[in-house]
Amino acid sequence: MIRKAVIPAAGLGTRFLPATKSMPKEMLPIIDIPTIQYVVQEAVDSGIEDILIISGKGKRAIEDHFDRNFELEARLEEKEDQAWYNEMRRLADMANVHFVRQKEANGLGDAIYYARHHVGNEPFAVLLGDTIMDSVIPVTQQLVDTYEQYGGSVIAVEQVPADKVNRYGIVGGTSMSDTIKELTTLVEKPAVESAPSNLAIAGRYILTPEIFQAIEQTPKGKNNEIQLTDSLLLLLKRENIYSHLIEGKRHDIGNKLDFLKTTVEFALKRKEFAAPFRKFLEELLATQEV
Ligand code: G1P
Image (cartoon, rainbow, N blue to C red):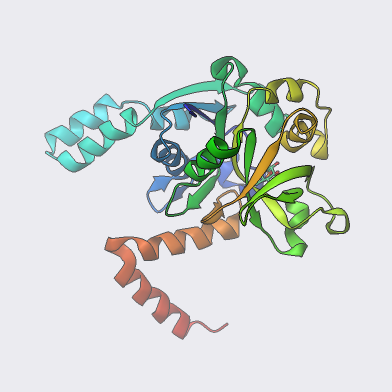
């Protein structure tokens, strides 16, 4: 059983400046919901209520978001706005959210290492805090199901075009089924010529606690950071690791174009905006000279 999730949210957000100079990228909202709330909701929908967020400098807004806000609650009660009052209470109670701060931005592997005391000796889920998954079955639930069937760490992957493999961790392995591979290699942001496949690590993992020892032994890699992908390659010498081809769509909110696309896509799915927003887009596109 997977009871704990770790959400790394300590990155500096350099791909989304200037917005992220003083605001965490994980708080960028898609319409009105901050990215990290979608991520916490995915964990909760996958049956995980113990959540550790790895935060860092300038990330206090994330803590406030999952805390009570008595002044706001009192004002909503005064206004008899029961729906928003209930939603604010639900938000503060939706999970047991804990925090630990990464002291220096030393990479994803280093960020995960901060979770070792909280996680202890059990397998746990990792959900990147700047990535939203849109799927029927929560992607973390999909990984939990594969973990229960195969054991060993499980990594969510998706296919990416050849010209994008150098932006991701890429895996290679032997097929166990249409969606699952037993891995033989992993490499962080390879050149396309040396990439083992076009299967990219997609920001969701189930990790066994042995990962912590592997991280301790991992030298600095790409960008002079401790890369989780390198630690997984070390772990592969001791344990089986599986990739799971996800059913769903990944939205990388730290990327400006993806952020825009996600906003439009989600707005077109929201009951109250779908019709007027579609009309607006159609009219805009008809009058725009491109
Ligand atoms: C991280 C991981 C990479 C993975 C990617 C997915 O990279 O290191 O393996 O493919 O997330 O979003 P980053 O995007 O932080 O550079």
